[in-house]
Amino acid sequence: MAFGRSSRTGAMHAVSPVEPLTLKILVAGGFGVGKTTLVSAVSEIRPLRTEELLSEPGVGIDDTGGVEGKSTTTVAMDFGRITLREDLVLYLFGTPGQDRFWFLWDELAQGALGAVVLADTRRLADCFAAVDYFERRGIPFTVAVNCFDGAERHPVVTVREALDLDPEVPVLLCDARDRESVKDVLVGVVEHAMSLARARRRSLSAGA
Amino acid sequence: MSDPGPNDPAENDPGRPYDPAHPHWFDDEAGPVVRPYAMTRGRTSHAGQHRLDLIALVVAEPAADDPVWDLTLSPEHSHILGLCRERPQSVAELAAELDLAVGVVRVLIGDLAEEQLVHVNRPVPPAELPDESILREVIDGLRAL
Image 1 (spheres, each protein chain N blue to C red):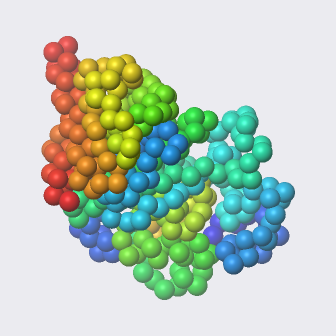
Image 2: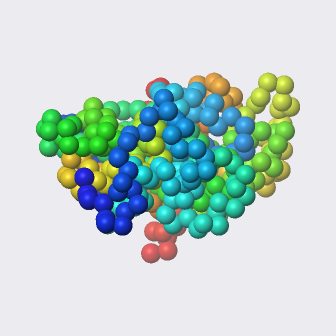
Image 3: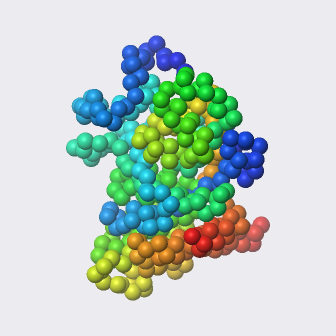
């Protein structure tokens, strides 16, 4: 197959003059915490749904354990798109909420700029698994506390302690329905990714 | 496109495209895991295929403009090619647009790449963060939304 790195010089292809660089940010968190709402708030398209089959090659047949009673063998991921520039497109992927679909996360997480862990203070434990996942894989993430109407607004420090977060992990309050608020969250993720990358480069050059 | 093997169970399948108006052509007992791959003649992966990332971009080649392809390709291949001719499409977008599982769409894209009707641009490789300048562009772009 003709594979190539995304080049920003697609001019030689008369059919499509611009081949944008594509990037992705993951949106994780418990079921019903507002992942798709967050994606909708900034996406230029109505969030699309893509499905992966549980029988995907490479997935052990045992992975379907626990879903025998279901009529479906697919798992859905909602995603949105933001064209930042003609040659720069950001995709937002809502991760499947159920823990048993985590084999999909590895694929989703590959090459991701970073992740938002969306938290609901009424059910903080729902995002423990996501926090663990990103911590262990060294994927830059921020925790965004979705302030539902009527939900008690826990101070950021309480959430940080409850989740036992490393001090450098940003915690933000947000409203997943609000475009400006979600923009701030996404900027926060990329800034965090940038500062981690910078620190990594520093430690590499210090070790050299 | 590629010939099914002699033992291919889908050989006798008339290649009937999925018709959303008649979604119960197969009932659940028929095996929902297998059915989606009937469209790929039972193939679940493509020879020599890297696993295409969801945000890998599928770009139509100039050869794809030849109208003969619309006559020779399956409706699904043709649909993918048509979308890519409009603008490059990510694997995820194609799967959503065709309402097919990602695994199925990967195989179909592999067919088109083999025919050199499309090429696939892989995104930034895993474990390799984009340049800081690109991250800055992302931040500026988000702020300007």
